[in-house]
Length: 190
Ligand SMILES: Nc1nc2c(ncn2[C@@H]2O[C@H](COP(=O)(O)OP(=O)(O)OP(=O)(O)O)[C@@H](O)[C@H]2O)c(=O)[nH]1
Ligand SMILES: [Mg+2]
Image: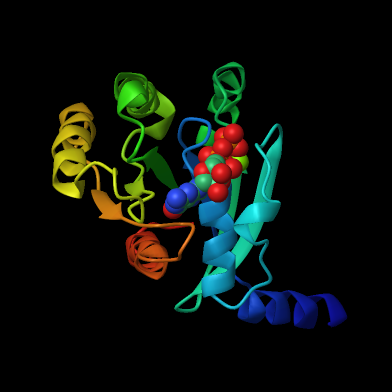
């Protein structure tokens, strides 16, 4: 009887959790975005000046509109990108962060995103691209970023994708990014 009651209780109080993988080149602002998202949705967060390049991974939890999200932020340095594969099977959505000021690495950024979306393991997974660092005067126009990156996402497979302008440093657009994920993930079975 105790076991039955316990299992009923667990079913009733079960929290569904969705895994979100944060990818992008090194220095794109992935960790800054994760910390800002935590702050935006009521958690404790590190200020930008205390964030260092990620060598392993950072994990954060946020609740957006009642939806529990577990965010995996992994290092974007070239030699660490081979590790991204290991996360694909378990993730429900991918956030790809782009440094909008880094014109020199735009080609590398496009190729990296392409590799992610052509991988069989990410097929059909919702993809949110963030045109970050919009607070910088020299940042690329978000319209141009949308043009470039939507083409990559759409050509590969019919998936839910979106490009949003943000400043992870100042927090602009970060709440919208969290809410986009919550809405999209509400349509995906855990
Ligand atoms: N101006 C500006 N700087 C930003 C923004 N987001 C991040 N940065 C800066 O960009 C640098 C890299 O940020 P990180 O969050 O460490 O980048 P990352 O993508 O996690 O990098 P890796 O961990 O090496 O993969 C830091 O100096 C941040 O302060 C932003 O929105 N605006
Ligand atoms: Mg990082």
